[in-house]
Image 1 (tube, rainbow, N blue to C red):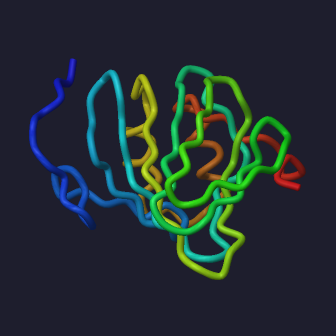
Image 2 (tube, one colour):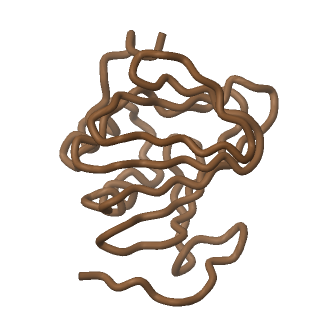
Length: 149
């Protein structure tokens, strides 16, 4: 079991100096344990993560800057800076930066399951179909593209 280490993960850095580029979005791990996994995302206008399901994890999103449009269980909602989004396991969700400004958010999932291993494999991968295939092996199931409409 990975224990939580005391300390600070500084702004603009990842835990242990790690950073991921996942389909053009920059992710920074902030805390990594078996019981929880926190990471920051930086989304430029037009970037998004399509609708997907975490069958074994609860997820939270704290919007730090900007606005995210979310498709949450089939309904469009908007989260602004300071808002906390709660995503129980098994609920389809995706997030989209439909604004003209960058967005930054802190995500965390509990328990971590295979998410850190997934991000390690997705780093610098450019083929969306391969991202979907690898994600399914790590308990992240993407819905068909029409779920994003």
